Image 1 (cartoon, rainbow, N blue to C red):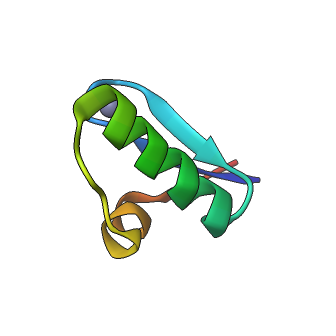
Image 2 (image 1 turned 135 degrees about the vertical axis):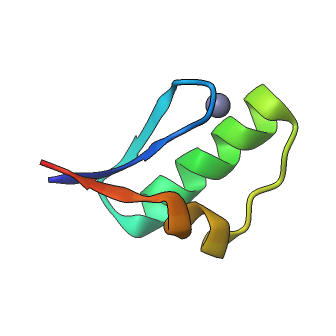
Image 3 (image 1 turned 180 degrees about the horizontal axis):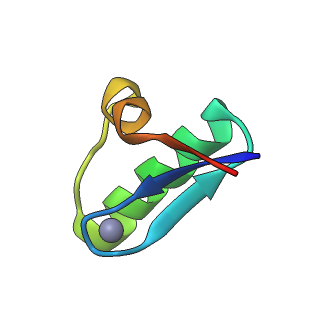
Length: 50
Ligand SMILES: [Zn+2]
């Protein structure tokens, strides 16, 4: 089981742990969208993937 955030741009950002997911989400948001995402924002969007 992994965690995933479905970004508005259609990209699924994944991580095996909350730490990894938030890190990947922050990288994606910054590199692709020029946006800074907080830890709370990222986890608020996270869903469990089977
Ligand atoms: Zn995106």
